[in-house]
Length: 356
Figure 1 (cartoon, rainbow, N blue to C red):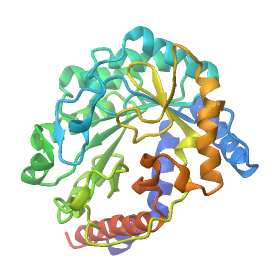
Figure 2 (figure 1 turned 45 degrees about the horizontal axis):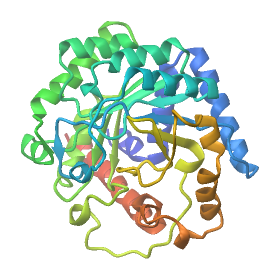
Figure 3 (figure 1 turned 90 degrees about the horizontal axis):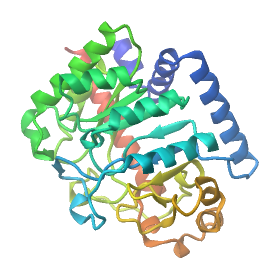
Figure 4 (figure 1 turned 135 degrees about the vertical axis):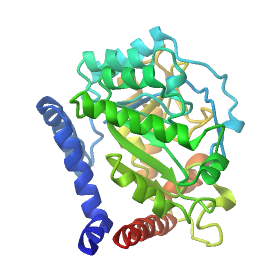
């Protein structure tokens, strides 16, 4: 038991297990396509070249949400709340497919299951040969019909956000949700997937570590490790919305920045077709164009995107937009400390498992 707990606790082995689980769940054509894309991406970076296309496109299908979570900056949203029109989705999807994008994420800001055509979108992308389609959900809206629709749609990965082990903590953080309902929704979806003889969608539980739930995260990990395919813990929000709720709130770090990987790997489209270069650009401060006026390919290689890359590459961080200079995910020393804190949560979970 102790040896197994130790194995679960080693970060590299956790990563390897997750990678192997994904590979085993994929069809041969998916493995080949994604492996080719990953190798090409890495080779481009090693040669100092821009990859021919983004590895991942994030399509914001809605910026509406049914919850008011403590760590979310939705209250500061100035963009109109809306769902993406089907014609806009189709245009973005077709351009991405033509460009050769291998991974498409169907959300960023908002609860994607609030869009009435989310499952049709998944089916559309899978029918057009996109190897990996996924989205993040709070899990509250996954009733019986939606669970069946998710399993039948061809979705490859479902990430569900659960930030507490007890109802009191979870419902304080995820305001408007009920833990018992979400647990049932997730567990019933996994049961349906397994009984259907399908390997996908893989189910990942994602939790944000903060002072409010730090004592419970080891138990949360222990609970979901044998139910979901992966449990992921992160202890920062790139937009800094945790504030004094951060587990590192009392610690101070220098602001040494490292280049952002997003600008070499991804693009994000908003519901109105605007394209931004930043995954934390809540209100469109870094929009570089719109798909109704420019192609994704042109924007990927365009001057606006390239300017940010050159500033990053040259270490000229003081010339970057404010959102980049204050991004927590780019602060080297804080990120290392946060990763150590995450690791401690897995160690604690392993210890509790060993003694249970």
